[in-house]
Image (cartoon, rainbow, N blue to C red; front, side, top):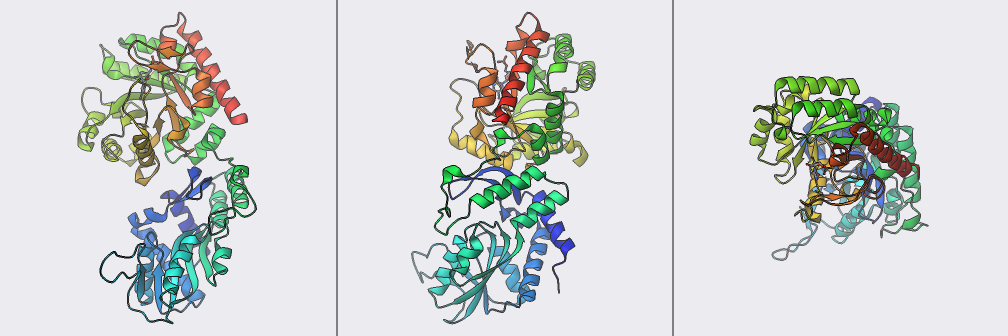
Length: 491
Ligand code: 5BU
């Protein structure tokens, strides 16, 4: 029999964080406010070892508490596989609750063999208000089934236990949110400020089962975790990709959020520009295919300048093909981009396979730790075809699923593109003189993109390239972008 040891609980808490079953940021919730913590236990089906541990611990909990029941029933949908495993391990027959009654045939809401008066234990993944548990309880009760207990994986401590208790159901959780926060903090995965921000939010958002807040209105809820309010130092700790952590730290220590678009066609001109502007930038952005005299020596020299002035190289390749082609375009050909560009850009048009294709272009896991991609969710070009739905789907690719360790951020024009503070918003179309160029490029000022549009890094090309003194211009853009950032986080 598996017992719940402290070590096992701790290891599972860390593992759940690692696989993105929960994360910290600024997330829109069903109840209409933004939460600083988000759980998505749907991902655990992709990790059989985690499924096994979670269900072992649920069974151990059931045994410890001596919860005997005739049936077990999962709250649809995330908890269904967990309930199945509990049923198998305990040899307790399962009941399945339909979310909608079938329009034909039996019209049953509860599938399985039972009799009125039978007892049933509920299995649930994450509890906020407890309303999902109560919906399942209601349907079971309408068939005469008796429910007195529910086992759950995570209690967000927002009033769920009290709400279900009002309906005669005791809730037993493997983890409380406080336990998860404290464990991650003890193990050095999150900062004290993260623990405090979440605790403050939870205290202010105790929820009734109807979704209303107990003794408070939504407007008064603290939102210390909004991405644009957090410093780059704090966000470095929230980032999932090692390279993103490095970039956030570089920005914070070098005090620059300027990316220079080195759109010049001669290799020596790019190197000269990089040497002059290197001290002021966190990243140099290249379009390697516009360089007329490209050579391996150019790359060697560029890498030396990048090291000397401590900036990263972003090749703005805007990959957009199927995974197999992208993996070759990234790693092969005359440019061998993967061998020198710390970061690249890619369209999300092909879906998730674009990220997988890029990953496949790298030789091994170690290489992946030093590489990353910025996904395009919006463009600065006038009349571009990107709409809200495309933006939303791009955000999903960037923040959900198993590729978050390779995504460094999103190229976009507004702070609504994504909420996760562990990603970087990269915004092109920055110029002190606002306006539109003769080919549809739209410009905003450094202050506007950072303070109003949520840019973490501003990309400047011609604003610097066409200045009489590029070094001076780079210093000015750096100063203005950085001051805007400081003002943004100080409010
Ligand atoms: P500019 O000279 O500051 O306009 O250069 C902007 C750079 O950013 C240029 O290299 C573009 O290819 C790049 N860019 C952009 O301008 N707009 C976009 O939406 C994206 C990239 Br994505």
